[in-house]
Amino acid sequence: MAKTGVFDSDPAMVAKATELKKELQRLVRAIVDDEDFSTQTIDQAKDTLSALKELKFKKRSLSLKLNDVLSCPEEFRCPLSKELMRDPVIVSTGETYDRPFIQKGLKAGNRICPRTQQVLSHTILTPNHLVREMISQWCKNRGIELSDPVLLVNEDGITESERDHFLSLLQKMSSGLPEQKEAAKELRSLTKRMPSFRALFGESIHAIPQLLSPLSEGKFEDGIHPELQEDVITTLLNLSIHDNNKKLVAESPMVIPLLIEALQSGTIQTRSNAAAALFTLSALDSNKALIGKSGALKPLIALLDEGHPLAMKDVASAIFNLCITHENKARAVRDGAVRTILKKIRNRMHVDELLAILAMLSSHPKAVEEMGELGAVPCLLCVIRETNCGRNKENCIAVLHTICLNDRTKWKEIREEENTYGTISELAQNGTSRSKRKASGILDRLNRTVNLTHTA
Figure 1 (cartoon, one colour):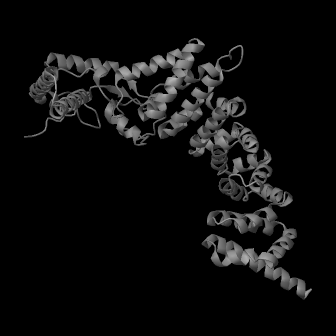
Figure 2 (cartoon, one colour; figure 1 turned 180 degrees about the vertical axis):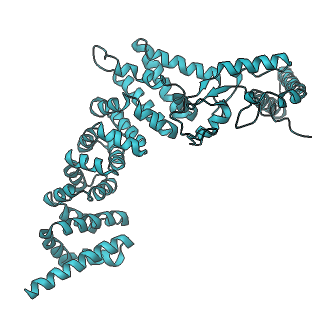
Figure 3 (cartoon, rainbow, N blue to C red; figure 1 turned 90 degrees about the vertical axis):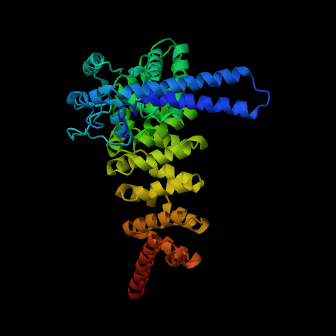
């Protein structure tokens, strides 16, 4: 027998059937496992079975309407599912789709409108009330019961009642301090546990400004409440994890300035989470440029300089990601990154992450010049001798190779190191392929300088 398609995929009916089956399993297990089970448990099992049977009959009766549904007007069908739409929504290109099916594509990271093939400027889905009303009237005239959108469960498992709760929490963010604290704490928890709640922020252009309103609309008399600030900033971090939110979050006018402010004035947890948010947002190249232009590198480097263990890893990750672009390399060098990084490496703090940043900065001439002036050569040679990490040795020798090519005065230090410890030769023989190449390049140049000296 052919599947009914439209009704078999009814989210409300599927969700209800699943709920009833789980409840029935629980009751039957209680009856089987407990020798002293009550008659009330049997009655509950019978009621659950009856409800499941009724749902089955309802589904069967609905399937008799299938021919009517198959003949519905083309404009009532979702372009993706080819089925009658239950919750029509409009995307940024003006096209209408059934919410569960367009959400599935958005969740997978697809930002192309299926019908027009245009890039979606945002992922906000606007209910198409006109089409919904026309479909409802068409169904009513044919005796077809259309699922209430309030009962529908979307691809992420969000019901309309949960969406309403989400909106009520955002409204509380404009209330008094107690309500703001309560709402912010719950939003932090929901966006951490449920990816679907992160996605909800992309459905309304007002959601992020509402979230930020306690931090952006004139401060309280005693300044920003630290707990409230931490919850709001952490919620931003949770939102930025969702790939479809990265552009929307970063381009919301107050987000980057408030994250920068949090780097400088929040609790250490708030500052660490602000750095982590900048790291996740900087996964997009357009966001790297935006964050760099906003002046985020200077407070990030200042926080790195403080050296708090809780923040170091997030800060280093953010700086690394931002410095992938040449413009941000220049900003980092100007804001004192080289001096701070070398100081931390000497103190053997987060050497892995900081060597990776130093290696990246070594493509910038001013950074290389500073490294030479600040004693990077003996520091990096010492790390090569001490560490067992192949990647760290590789980053050290790559930076040394660049410094020596740009500053002939450093060859003396390299020669003394090689004569005393054989550090470069050992790496040329046993390092990674890149380490061997860089070490061999230094040895070749070193031998040429020695030969030129003898010839002279």
